[in-house]
Image (cartoon, rainbow, N blue to C red; front, side, top):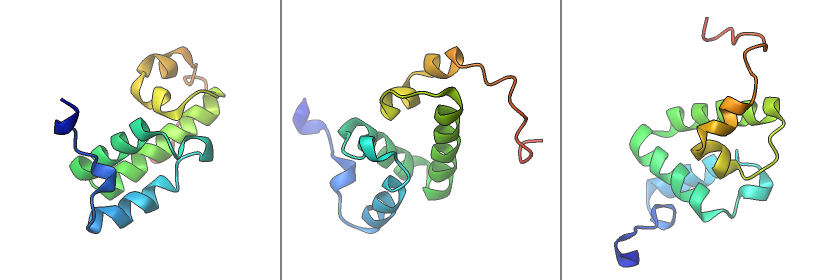
Length: 97
């Protein structure tokens, strides 16, 4: 089965530069997390750069507001982390109104 896994983050081509630029948004402690790299690479290939960057910005903001200190990958994949955090009392996002 491992031979069927394609390491998207290592593919050459136009996605490589976009991937590297997007990875700069990730907290320093998580930059070498292969699972996170693959998740971001997958989102880039399926959603595009703008949507992926917006998604990361929102998730980074949520993690900061929650005071989350664990793995950023776990925060992204596990919606329970966000549900445990009470963001309802925060001021609404003016862009979403």
